[in-house]
Length: 317
Image 1 (tube, rainbow, N blue to C red):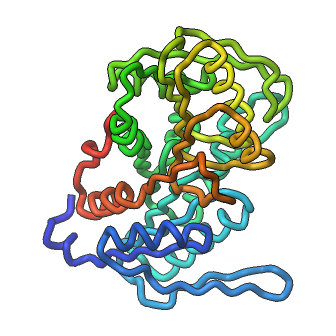
Image 2: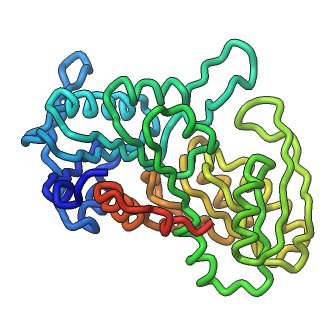
């Protein structure tokens, strides 16, 4: 480990990609610095170029960019990492609040790509020396990288909010079997009961039928998920839970992708409140949606990573 006096003399620079500028500004403000100057040039044929407008030689660089669609957001991040490498930055840490393509973490049918592994390879080939991200769709994606990965969880943001609701008959529920581990961690920490929704799909983004495992009658149910895309699963789960006699149902989701008819489904559902983070900007506002910021969490982790401090205190469950 490097001498602390040497680390303290190394400049920390925060830069933002265009897709996450709204969040990067919040992170920089909490950290106590300004975002670095970077230019973005688009040519007449659609090709684009990024350039740092200040010296970054020998600095610890944190480049903040979520890689939600379009794929240009990912490629922009790759270009910024490459530019930093060629400008002799000491460390290049890619801060990716939402990592796109993470749902493609395995071959679930013949002749398909493993997109998450490809993205990991691209980030490393570009020159990233460390990754900071939040709520990957599958924990094992960390193993796709050969550089350190700081995998943060939204539980440190969601649990205090759930506790503030003072729900006397709390039940934590998973909208599908894949989320059972996450829901179980919340339930254990909060000493709450647990329920699981089992869904069957014939095609992607369309749930054929759903079954509830567990008792929810008279309970205040909190559904926990990492991503809500079309909102078909979460709204079907919420309506089924209410049909089984639940007192109320709320949903908590880290990454609000919310594509297609998601907003219409949420408005028509019996979900009391959908609580999300700002890893992805909302496409539109809704009275049912409450946004909690991840800026404080990421700013604190950036500070600790730069100073070689433990980030264990940032994990609740």
